Length: 275
Image (cartoon, rainbow, N blue to C red; front, side, top):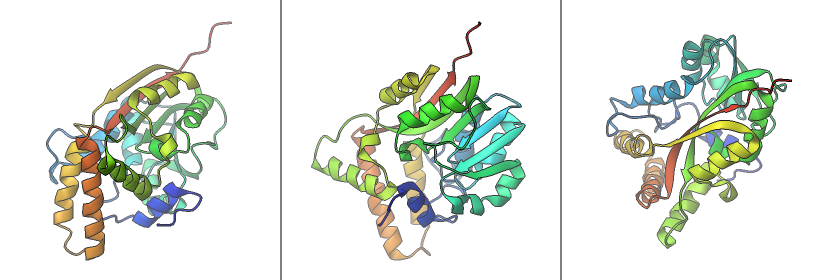
């Protein structure tokens, strides 16, 4: 419950590498689904999300994965983008350590760092990918500005995010929202709609910004699959299962009231003007 100065790191260190509700071992994203959310599709769904984002990365360049989780996605990114250098950045050192073998498989360089102060030289990166991390950042605006700084002209950003499309219509929804803020270590001031996220990207200097809202293919089936996973978690302590059911119900309330959605965003840094 105490998140101190780095809420995101505290949250994910508490989950650990064997989080019992993960849709596939080592994978922490919600997936991109073709079906209603079965446990059989879950391993494919979590990979499909990363594949979909990675398809927009330039081939053979320097790729930066911001908020790489437990490293499960990095071999997949490496297979699709074929980078000459893949940098996996995470604010949580324990996750980098837990994912060491996968990072080795991907040939990725692990870096402990903050998305607000990317430890990367300016104009040295060809593509940036970030999967379900931006809602943890202190400021999406600063993140987008950092992306523009490190990208070479014409470089690409591809990312997924969770948006908040409307304020809570009542007390129940407000309490559900507050519960999720606390659970995931989020800051209320960083809650943004899909339109606002796209606007922040443009204001930072990114161009060709494209946003796709797809909560029906991400959040809804993921909730169904997590509920199935929870029913099968009989070996998990009762307190943890009760807490998981409570927070799952809160997310369902937010989604049912159309407060939250899921966003895929693609953009690039403008090419340099001719002299």
